[in-house]
Length: 277
Image (tube, rainbow, N blue to C red):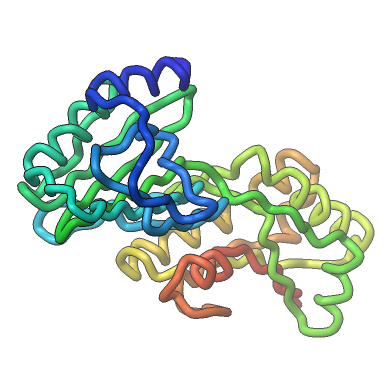
């Protein structure tokens, strides 16, 4: 569905018209794209956004559903003198708006929060709406892979291998929980293949690393599968002799950064090339 049409549905569902607000929105903040029309009597008190981040969307019984992609967080505050709508009215408005454009509700805690998702223009978007004490908090993630702007070239990889015996490669991508090498990994794989072809006696251990989200044993298996997938791709697509490569998985056991935020976890999700004897 076209995004403009989707927004019209949202506006109709919320039953609101654009108007001047008594309290000014925080400079630089706008309504989230998924919910472009706000509840009456509120202004934007704060906002945050990131081109790529992760968030654990609430589910029932303390469970979480982690999603990664383009992140947006908007905080609405009730204007002075305005009466706060009932909790049911707030959450039902956003629930109906989401369903109106083909979305679905994943979980809800009555009077507190609602989590749901929708696919628009081929992109999956997750949203969490929470209310309380004159505030409405809306977090959204438009799923997508982090853009890898910098990929080490073959010469830099060779230098690191000589200096330290290993090199981290961050341009090899997989879907969450999967071990299939994604097409956007090609620039990094091109450089690894170039390195191997320039140094015909070089043998490599391809080592898969993960963050610590999930169970350790599951991450160990995933890291091993990803390492083996990379070696298979180098053999099949680039003609590298299989005897020169061996895949190993160490999961979350060798982090290079903290795992308490997405920036650290992104650094820990990597493939290392280790010079083998």
